[in-house]
Length: 264
Image (cartoon, rainbow, N blue to C red; front, top):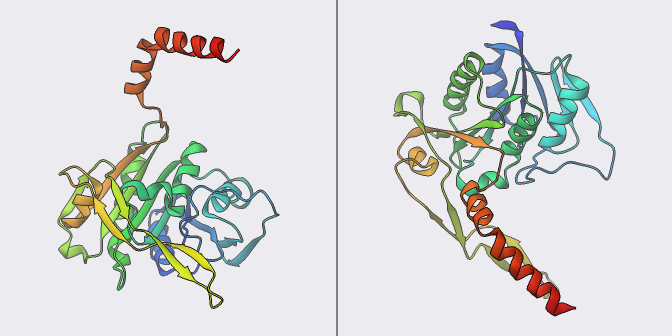
């Protein structure tokens, strides 16, 4: 363990989740680990920040704090107000369920890593694909391996790692794969439900899930028993479209000018 390495551990399943406890234990073997996490489950909150009310931090025990807010709140407050200095790395997880494909846009686990990256801190999101009997010790081991790598060789600017682990014992994991973000499509995911008074409501969830499969996608890697390691860049700019639109700018401006003239 290197006490000079300060690690902020957070999640979206809440400070009492077995996933964060396993992750915290693994991070304490690497450096000075501190938990700052939501006080309860905050799954699928995305990259939300609490602005409409004050937030409270409670110290539960040594080096373990909870915040009555979102994962993003936990990172912002942890870095700015709780930790003794800016951490060397932010590790978020271990999420109960995978964060694959487009799901990363909804994930509180991933959003904590995004916030760390925005603050120019090396960041890692860790999730385990499964629905019960989670092998957290497997995910914690691979999270530790990834953190050691990131400390030796920092990621490029504006980049974090999205790590997804199959719900297997370490002996059954086939290895690690460097992957790209896949594509996930939900069909019939909005369910009609009715109150006892017959009022119609809608419940988001369920339906049929369709995956884009490919040898280099995060989804395929985990389904095949590999740990998926996806470097994610925060710059959402589509540079192909940028070049195309720059080339089309003269005609684009002409259309805009004509339409503007016709409106007047």
